[in-house]
Image (cartoon, rainbow, N blue to C red):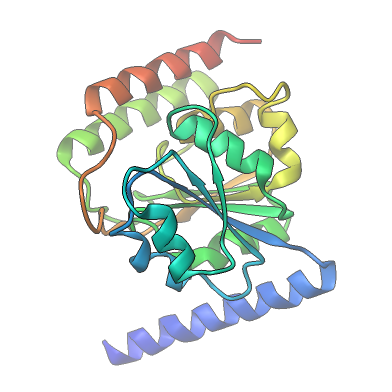
Length: 247
């Protein structure tokens, strides 16, 4: 086990070395984008683990009622905080992408399900010709999610693959990296609903190069999820069908 741990650490170091070299040569900047709503207990498990080579940490807050923003600034004094104009994660993601200053944007979950230390695995494919790196919790992995959520994700993923000719293994993962310049292709009028399932469909429709990256998922660290399963599922289904019949 110790040798395996050393091997993984060495592999991570090599991956980050390659990233840093390419980042310096091409003078690229990277934004870590995190959307929050009442996540003061989770942020201590997330923000300190963001790599030093990230140029901007952007927190889009949904007007939290707890100390989310205060805790974020205590943990990372140079963090940039903005408040989303509307409601819901799709609105927060769209606003965060618009506000980000980096050439590359990496989206992370605030609840600890996404490990910031794996960020290089998502950025490196972009430096090698891909437009979008999407996380997959089911790519040779066994995520810590409930059977209901597992079934729902499987159903929507299969439906998306059938309707759009994709070969995704996960439609709803929150760990993604992409070039900011592709934003105009995903949301040309600046008003689309950009949750993860919709983004994954739009990148296929736009003809962009996408690769899936294994995303280990240990589950939410603290508290309870914000989404109601049935309500969220219905919204995802409507978005899939809307994108299928939209020109």
